[in-house]
Length: 252
Image (cartoon, rainbow, N blue to C red; front, side, top):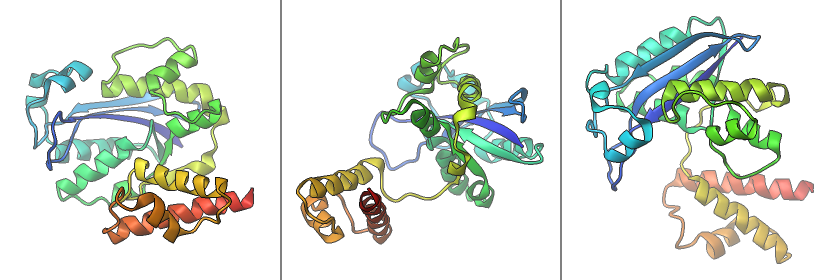
C-alpha cells in the first residue's frame, strides 16, 4: 500500500461572506511501503469566487496572482489528481488535520461533482497521531513538528507540495508509533470544535459538582443562548458527542 501525503492551500478571506473558500493549490507526495518517495503531484487551481487573491493569502503563501489566473479550474485539476491517485494499487491519504480532505469534499460538491470517491477513501490524521506520540493536547503546525523532531526544514511553508514534503518527513519519523486503527473516512460535521469543547467542559463541570451528566441539563445550563441547536443534525451530533464523553467518564 502507498501512503499519499496530502496538503492543500485555500483562499481564505479577510471579511465576512457567505461565499465559499476554495482550494487554490493541491500538493501530494506518494510514499511506497518502505516510505520512499516515488512520485509527487502539484497543481494550482483557479477559484470561481474571490478570484483575486487578497494580500494576506499572497503574503502567507507566496502565490502570485498570475499563477492563479493561468490555472485550470477545480473540476479538471481534481480529475487529474484522482487519476494520479489511482496509479497506486491501494493507498491511504495522510493529512495534517482534517481540513484538507474537508475542503476537497466541499469544492467537489460546490462544482456538483460526485463526492463518492472522496467519501470512501481512508485517511489518517497525522496531526492527531503526532499529538498522541508526544502526549500533548494543543494543536501544532507541521513546521513546529518538524522543528520539534530536529528535521531540517526545506522549501516554503504554506505551499502545498513543500508542506506535503515536510509532512512526509514527520510521517517517516513517527511511523512506528502510529495507531492504524485510527484511520478514518470523511464524515460531515454539523458542529464545530468550539461547540464540542463546550459540551466536553460541561460534562467535566457537572462531575466536579458531583452531578450526574444529563443532556437536558447541559443544554439548559451550558449551551442555552450560546449554541444554536435549531438544526436537528447539529443537536443530534452534539448529543451523540455528549453521550460518548459521559461514557468515557463512566469507564474511569
